[in-house]
Length: 536
Image (cartoon, helix red, strand yellow):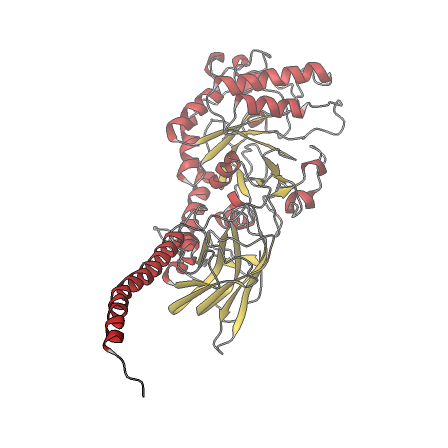
């Protein structure tokens, strides 16, 4: 047995004392380390996850502004209005142009009051008659009997549009059946650019310049200097978009029925199209491999003709609703022609149809049923706690907030859970197009009465806006599934609505009597728990 001596005890006392002193220091160091790591972690996590890289091509700010207008009103007006013609010969006496009740403010108010935020005027149609007093020809309003030759339709429309906050566009026909220099390539291009300069420098801001390649088969050969024209337009009106068969900013959809392809890309290859010689299928669908961003514009007239004719009657409001689904609802802009009559006013029968069309849209789209759901996503960019890209964003109108899934995910789903079953037959999906068009294929499922997932509708391409109609569904659980995408899909808005006017496969024959005075439907058709699939 070893006994400790007094000296040993004296030696141990400083050691014990040192340990007691060091313990608080060690503990302090550990606490400091852990606190520092936590603070660093919190600091790092406080920085938001940056947005996903755009997938090219992407739109310019002018193209985004154009797309957001959704609908524009075309105004075909000129000597043809007074001669019962569509393509004037260029030989009509200017004195026939005399709209005694002309009122540009009425045109603009009709447009604005019914959801059209842009108007486009045929400043010069194929007959060559100019609705402004051009210095380059006498074949214009200055040679007419209207206001003793002192009138200017373009000026008055410009003033009315500016006062109402409505955007203005102008159509200047390349084909001119009156101008003697037409057929002389250099002289006529100079003449045309001179007139274009007048229109783009005299009347303030112009938001769209509309061109086409229309020309009679037996007319003189002409080479149009389109690239020179486009450069001039962008120089004089940098905020304007240019429409033609191949853009450069917006393209013709390929038909005059107002209908886009059920697949419709804003992506396009301009080199694949020649103005005046288009491929309707390519123009109507676009190109998923396209290098240019050139969204489509669907032009159609409310009447059988483009100019007003006393013998013609307008389409019905339900027909316009169908066109809305097949143009705006397919990632395009609807350009609806509403021709003023020979008195210089939009006809009352046209106004009644436009007002009913407006009321029908309001009755369908005034409330998004999806806003009454609890929404969730399969994943969220930056993690579930990152509110920048959460699923709640798809219930906020607009394209600048959106849901983004987590990186490297292959399962892209948005779930909607309702407290009780809802009835609907319309799906609306939007993409944040400023980051490119991404979605290729998608579908909507609902939980049926047997507790199994069933497909309600399937679609291809989304873009700025996609609307799909199908037989009515009643369910309390839905899911939007993105099946295929060019990159991680992004959804800026998701809408679920009930449309009592459209019937699967065709459009109902509801008349104006189907609406009450407040625009609400008085009857409903077609209720299905297991709908047929459609994407029209």
